[in-house]
Length: 99
Image 1: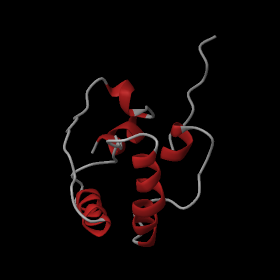
Image 2: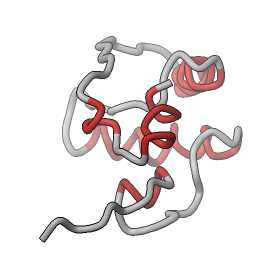
Image 3: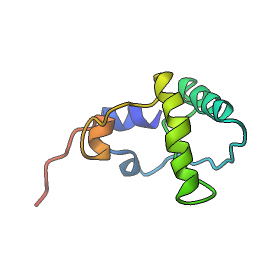
C-alpha cells in the first residue's frame, strides 16, 4: 500500500511520484455508503478517500454529520485529530529543513 511505502521511506504519498486514483460515485443509503467505504478500507483496496459532494456545502455537511459517525462507530475513521498537519495524522516523520 502507498501509506506503508511512504512510511517506510519517511515520505508523504505525493513525494513517491506515483499513486493510483479511482473516481466513482457511491449511491445508496447512509448505511450502504458506510458499508462500501469500510469494505474498501478493510480489504486494503484503498488508503483513504477524497469526498466530493454533489452539492456544497450541504452535501459535504451531510456526509460529515451522517456517514462519518457510522465509520467512527466501526473504528475505521479517527475520532480525534492526532496532530496539526496531514503528515502528523499519517504518522510521518517531519524531514529536516534544507534551509
